[in-house]
Length: 216
Image (cartoon, rainbow, N blue to C red; front, side, top):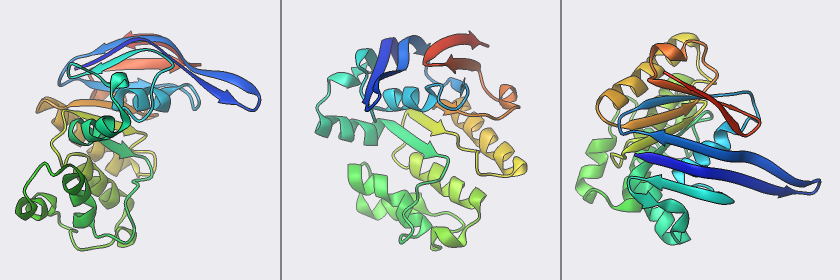
């Protein structure tokens, strides 16, 4: 499902070049639930961005579902991303002026993956007509996950998805990701959760931009 070959990423800063990723090689099969761990600044988010086509590697290749995504033009990459990858973020990234249902409908509207008459039905949740500001953190994250799944993507990438949730809600969100993987979705999450090992298939540890270990 996801193949990273010799991935390196260098950013240019006022202080000079900075190597965020260094020669990463990783294979992830379809339906796997991967926990990406490492300290802040280790390169976890950058690696997720490579997998999802949000950023491009300086060297190396990223293949997702038989597509070498770094070779795609920006317009084709955006369309590919909308159909293939669902993103879940720590701070939810919901549009505050749209209801929960309208937030979930956005990817479907963008990619036109479902007929207009079906989009609202797919987006309905218990809090469908409420604005994000009226929802709890756990409710907002569930809306964000529903939005990530709106186009039935084969891959879900989550960056610290439980970082702003209480322990009980975080536990249920991780269980939801486990259920997704059991149903065939490839799930990769960057996390600091201490009990992540109970739900994931493998742990990938990153330190200073390098792959330190793969266990599980």
